[in-house]
Length: 291
Image (cartoon, rainbow, N blue to C red; front, side, top):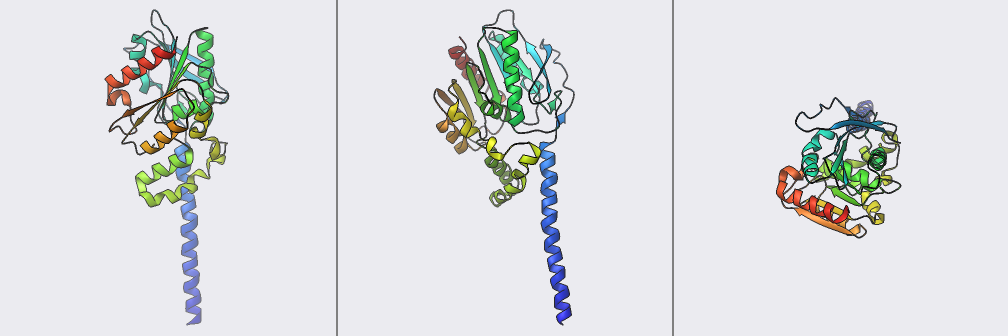
């Protein structure tokens, strides 16, 4: 009997150990998939004239971009896509902006689209791409005012840029407060509220994957020090960046700042959700600040 109990104890401990290390392995695989580069060809739009451009970034990548320049322009707008997207997702944004008289730069972040890179860093290396985009526009359009529109990760890249982006206007759509909260929100969407306790299995990988501490990926801290005019956009039905979190980011941000709310919007393209409101909001903000 004693030997049987000892054998059963070994089996139980073996099962528990296997479950523990199996969970760690699964988390490591998931973490690798989340950070994996998403490079692919991005076809040039057939019905929207653009110039293909490229520029070097301190992220280590050579950034692939498109430049659209109307006959006359009174400012430059840089468009920054979200996680696992590419520049083609912002062509419709570029259409209405060029129609309003702005030159527009669209580009792929490192490890996205046609810009090489080995790992997605959720705004850390991507913030250096944002700096490189601003430097490119300053060289191409000397003396012109510049605005930057960032969506989700693209907005985080705005907030996290060091030094701060030397521009005249910033639009931050669906920006996450910090990477720990963002991870918890996304786990909760898939596993329920109890799943939030699993977030350390993923966020503990950030130093190994992204080359920075989780604390370096905090937009809510960064916006406290950005004094450029800022337009924040948030949806009330967003589960990836909850509306309460968006309100907290806005409250924390330095002046001048404006918050525009899209009732019923999820973590999605606001231009498609409500094109009239979105275009009017963006154009009014740019007109007031790109002078």
